[in-house]
Length: 67
Image (cartoon, rainbow, N blue to C red; front, top):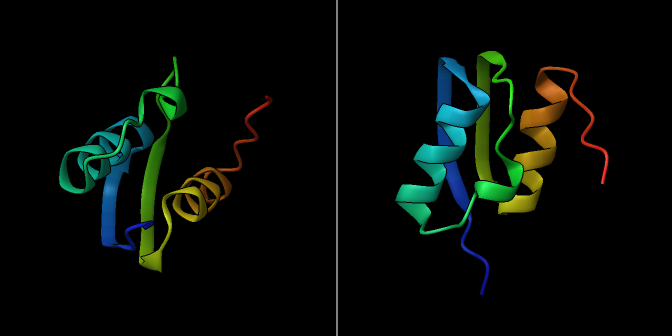
């Protein structure tokens, strides 16, 4: 079962947000960590799956991850 994430972050970075989600929701976030961290002014996750959060987080800073 996917756990839904409910969090708000202000004046943080992508990697810091991913670390926090990983600790709180016991998710391995290492694949989504960026080699060069990007500042995030504000992002809100209201009952979102982890994959939705990643999409929202990357979109909030204009980042496109190439697979």
